Length: 467
Image (cartoon, rainbow, N blue to C red; front, side):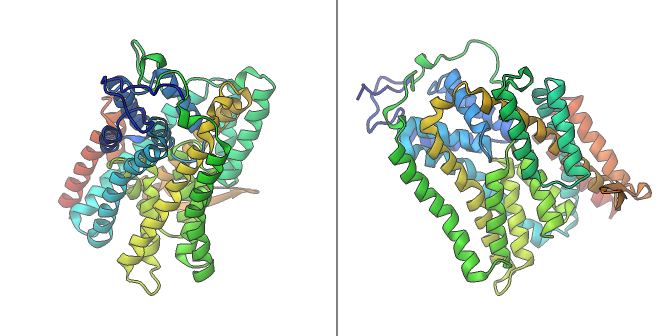
């Protein structure tokens, strides 16, 4: 074994095969988690600033290489990136600590807000707060369309894929997973054929100025001993994680039956963890379509309330799924009390949503070097990202219809159907507040968190004055 690297900020050697002291890593990951607001772009920026620029633990190219791998995976890329870097620096325990700390603050915050929501949601101030958040969230999702679209739609082929994805989900109601699978297949063969349109472009930008070279970081250029490809370790670790993920779901199906709400939660969000590529907003489109229209666990406005919670608390945006599971349990408690069933629903949802991220990283990260420069996989990712733009556009239209109009009706054109608003049912206060939020984001360049808080305050003021 080669000599272990030293902490970039200290001359004291690190023992036990860790690249940095584990106690220091725990503090850093707790800090990253506490500051991780604003969706995956903001979370990745915070992680980069602390781990690369400030602590100098990981070099720029290594950080971006890890991010590119995480972008190929289903699930929350920022959460997976934290697990990946934590694993590189402090082995399996480091990945577990980084991943758990990244989720914990958001889980606690949204659970507390969920209790307030079901217990005091009809209080004027609380009602007004969520009214304001709905309008701001609509503006935030519109921003996501422009931000992701600007990065993904670099040529006419990618625009065509995005348009096809939008039409498939909006008019034909094609399930989200099928759209992503189709886009991935097209991109894979397009990349493999060497078609320029499918060449991977940018990604998350980490900023400008002098970058930290890998050789100057604590991790260095070489692969750590514990991160070398080890099929036995990968299979053993993956087997344990897969059992922790799937055995509870199987137990629910066997003991409670497939029609029980907890069985449905376990199965649905496990499926989501496998097929949701493209980031949080793509996940939301899939969850909204199924949880609102399929299962009837919550109403469209409540989905927006949950997204408002996730936008204003630390952690991954798909923590909104926890709110969905909470309401599902609350409204179908069976023999349990509603709050007990809701709490169990939230815990189960979080478990099956985030545990697979650990599985994907520990199973594949040791073999990541073999994926470097793979043009076929790069083409698949480009096409999937383009399709996600169309899916998010569908989510934007869906949110807009239910935020700005009290009534929506469905019209048919042969085999095509679409939702259209009843124009006379427009909600003028919602329209005004949405315009305010859009101007704040697009013209004033106000941060997402400040926009959300400002809109929530205006929503409270409006509701109190009206009532």
